[in-house]
Image (cartoon, rainbow, N blue to C red; front, side, top):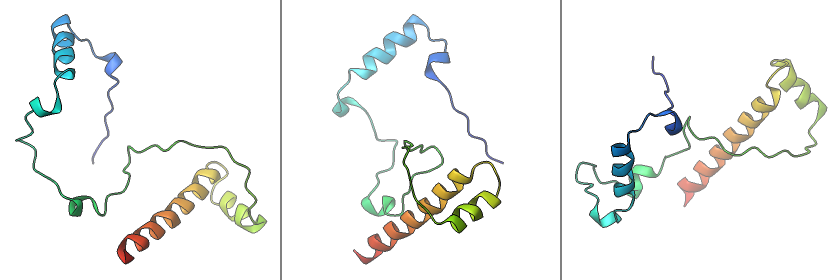
Length: 105
């Protein structure tokens, strides 16, 4: 079983030495950073990439007219979370469409 662990940098206890090192590294130009231990990637490596479980798109409140039977179906799936379920159905359709368009390009 995998577990996602998130760390809030504000919760870390950093020493003055740690902070000084972070400031020094932050000022380095990209050309001064050694990337030799990271394997190179190509466009092919990313062609099937989709936002993962850490991706949290901004939510936007809208007024939407949908058929009453569709709304009833979504609510029957569980009283709570029907809007999230509708969003998931729409996201699945969007990703399917994007994948189809990528394959035909």
